[in-house]
Image 1: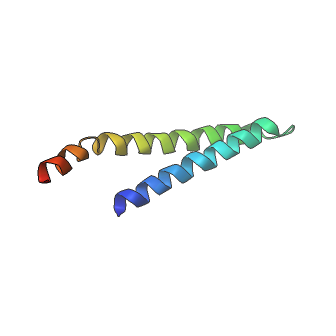
Image 2: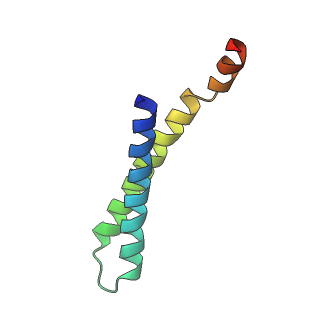
Length: 67
């Protein structure tokens, strides 16, 4: 269950960061900090997601051994 919550948080971070970045690009007078913040939030979400993927990349092998 913890892995599922972690993946949801990672997805939310990526989507929120992408939303901020798209807003900053589309808006005419958007502050540059929206771009920087959106990029940082995306990178945090991607970093957390890739760490999770690396840690669980061999889970399917354990499942095959148990069967």
